[in-house]
Structures are given as C-alpha cells and as structure tokens.
Length: 193
Ligand code: ADP
Ligand code: 5GP
Image (cartoon, rainbow, N blue to C red):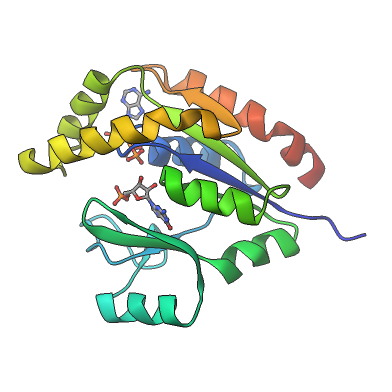
C-alpha cells in the first residue's frame, strides 16, 4: 500500500514563534517541507512569492473562493489568508510530510478535513506581555495594530485546547520548543526515513 503523508499545522497568535520554529525544523530535517498558503497581504521586504506565501490580489483571491479551490479562508488582521485544498491533499497522497502556519479557526477546519492525516499543534508564548515584546522587537506591527493583534491572541489562546498538542515557546527557550516539536513529529519522521 502506498505510504500516506502527513500535515503538521502550527497554530497560534502572530508572534508566538511559528515561523521561527518552522525554520528550526527545516534546519534539523530535510524530510519536512513548508507548504505556503495564499494571502492578499503585501509581501514583506524579505518575502518571495511562492516561498513564504502565494501573494495574490483581492480579485484573484475572490476567484479562488468562487472556484472552490480553498479548503478554508479567514480574515486575519485585515487581510485574507487561505489554504489550497489540492496542495494539502497532494502532500498526503504523495506520502510527503508538510508543515504550515495557520490561525486557530483555519487550523480547526483543516484538521476536520484531514482528521487522520494532520496534527494540530498550538504554539503559545508564556504570556501576552511576552507576545507584545516579540511583536515590538520584530518591528512590523504598527502601534495601532498591536492592541488588535493582542486581542486576537487572547481569543486564539482560549481555543488552544481544541488542538492535538500545545507547545509552549518560552522566551529564550526556542531550542527546547523545537526539541519538543521534533518529538511530536518523530513517529512520522521515522516512517519517512
Ligand atoms: P509567528 O510566525 O508566530 O508570527 P515569529 O516566528 O515571526 O512568529 O516570531 C516572532 C518574534 O519572536 C521573532 O522576532 C522571533 O525571532 C521571536 N522569537 C520566536 N521564538 C522566540 C523565543 N523562544 N524566544 C525569544 N524570541 C523568540
Ligand atoms: P502573517 O501575516 O504574520 O504571516 O500571518 C498572519 C496569520 O495568518 C498567522 O497567524 C498565520 O498563521 C495565519 N495564516 C497564514 N496562512 C493562513 C491560511 O491559509 N489560513 C488561515 N486561516 N490562516 C493563515
């Protein structure tokens, strides 16, 4: 029987460390590939189309919705983000291991669509204060966005228990969090080797 792939969904508020953890995983194993999602947000200076995200216009996003290409989509901080049904289904059918970053509502929708072929992992900082400090340090959050992001973070953290796993990414303890994440992925990594 062909091997089935698996999707690891890193869920959690902006600034919790999902992108950083994905970089750590990719440094530690070549077996897990990042699956970009699609957004109407403008690329940041360091971002490239098709690498961090597929960046599309509002009209292109409307088309994706109309064609039924998106498994789910959400407004997050004033922009739309969505996951391609085909891209995720292909990862699983081709026996690959994929990792992606998604908000809590989207994560629940993907988990419902692929209950056995995905693992939802909630990443949270130790406190909202820590989250504020990280978003300030990252430098891409305007003051007026900060309260909005932190309010949404509270909503997201309240839903953490809906996920398969909760991973605390404490300040200065990135390696510990990455070790734990590798531990969660180990059964699938073992099969893929
Ligand atoms: P997300 O992808 O969840 O929005 P990022 O991975 O961009 O979050 O992380 C937000 C900021 O926090 C980044 O500047 C990152 O370097 C920093 N960061 C991530 N994890 C830790 C940690 N364990 N300790 C201290 N800073 C961290
Ligand atoms: P950022 O703009 O900081 O890269 O991401 C903002 C938020 O959107 C993050 O919480 C990220 O996980 C989430 N996100 C990214 N792609 C998707 C997606 O396809 N669907 C949903 N629901 N959320 C997403």
